[in-house]
Structure formats: structure tokens, C-alpha cells
Amino acid sequence: MTTPVPAVTELPGKPRSRPRRSATLVTGCVLTGLVALLALISVVWLPYEPDDTSGTRLAPPGDGHLLGTDKLGRDLFTQVMNGSRIAWEAGLGSVAIAAVLGITLGVLAAYAQGWLDDTVSALLDILIAFPTLLLAMLIVAARDATLGSAILAIGLAQSAVVARLTRILVKRVLAQDYITAARTSGTSRPRIVAAHILPNIWPTLVVNLALQFGLAVLAEAGLSYLGLGAPPPNASWGGMLQQAQATFTTAPAGAIAPGVLLVVLVVGVNLIADGLRDTLDPARRRSA
Image 1 (cartoon, rainbow, N blue to C red):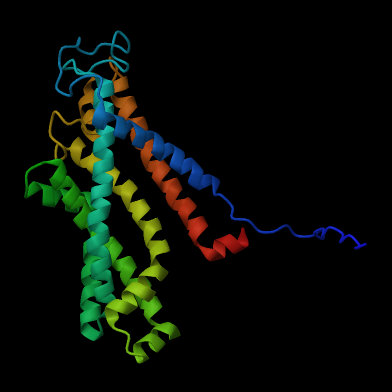
Image 2 (cartoon, one colour; image 1 turned 45 degrees about the horizontal axis):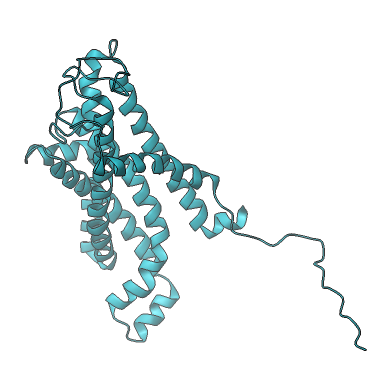
């Protein structure tokens, strides 16, 4: 008869460390997810056509119009839904342009030496010194005032920030011993970038690009407020704010709704960036 083996019990002490879900990250995902859902619905369904002016001018919420109508009789909820789609297009498009150009230029600048390194660094500092909105206004003014022009302008303006950060991060990685060993073994530069550099810098870049998304949304709203963004009948949140400022006392929903959603999206994206920083930074994970 075999002696039964007693069950192994864990000794009391420090519990096992488990991956902690950042409350900041979850909150940011919820806020941005609500605006993203509104944008996705606007792609397949809208309560009214964007240029439908059949409604009563400056009608209050109700009677077939959830948020009322503007001074032309257009449904405000339709405009808000369209504005959410435009905000996401502007944010994602600008960040994509900034990421492709900025990371490419940053990696090339990190490999530069001597006077070329100093020149590239000075040029990036000069571009960063220009406010993003001002630089975007100059680019849009040279082209037609369309959403595509605004996205291109904002992306080009933000690429200098991404390039400067990429250059700093890549230079830190290039100073590591394992990079020296890879060079000594004959590994090509493209292989070093793909296998060693990008995997080590992407956590910081992701956080920065998330922040750039929020700045791009604000920049597009600013351009549309000045009449340099998406033209009618496309309703950008910035354009809605500009049109509603004259009728705020009689139809406040025209300014409150786009303003609240703009704040929700930007705050949500910033919370995601903070949550990603806490999740991806090993030092923060150890100290948590």
C-alpha cells in the first residue's frame, strides 16, 4: 500500500507577480472607443444627409433631431457623427505620415557623423521651433483647403518631432555593446536596424505617436476653425465650433457637443499614452 503524497501548499509570503492592467489605459480605451464607435457608425449610417437643410433653423433638441439643428437647418447629430470620422481620419493619417517620415529620417540622422550630424540636428530643432498649427497653416495655404491637405500638413509638421526623438533613441542603442558585436560580426546596417534598433525603441515611439495623435486632432480642429480644413458639407468639429459661436445662446448644443467630444477624444488618447508608458516601461513595472 502506497503512502499518499501530501498536497503541496504554497508558503505564505509575497504573492506571485501578475501583469497589472493599467486603470489609466482602460479608461483611455473606453473614452476613445466611444468616439471610434460613433465614427464607424457614421461610415454606414447617418440620420440625415450632411447637406440636408430641410429642418427648421436653430431647432432645439427633439422632434426628429437629437441635438437640434444649426442656422442652416442641418441636423447637428449628423454633423457630430461626421466630425468624429474626420477627427479619426486626421489623427491616423497625420500620425502615419509623421511615423514613416520621422522614423526614417531619425534613423538616417543617427548614423550621421561630424558636421552632417550637427546640421541635421540643427535643422530638426528649427522645424520643431515652429508651432505645428502655424507650419500646417503655411502648407495648407499653398494648397487647396481640403482634409487631405490638412492631414499632409500636420503629418509633415509632426515628422520633425518624431525624427528628433528617433535620432536620440537610436544613438543610445548604437552605443550598446551588442551593437558593436553585431557590427564586428559583419551584420549589415539594415539588419541591425530591423533586428536590434527598432525592437528596442518602439515602446517609446508608440507612446509618443499616441500623444501626436491627440495633437493632430487638435491641429485639424484649429485649421477647420480657421476655414483651412475639410470644406462643406463635411462637418469638422472645429468648423462646427466656428459656426456655432454666433448662435451659442440660442442653440448651445452646436458648440457643446463637438467641444465635449473633442475633449473626450484627446483626453482618452492621452490616457492611453500614459497607460502604455506604465505598461511598456520595465522600470515602472518593477516599481509598481
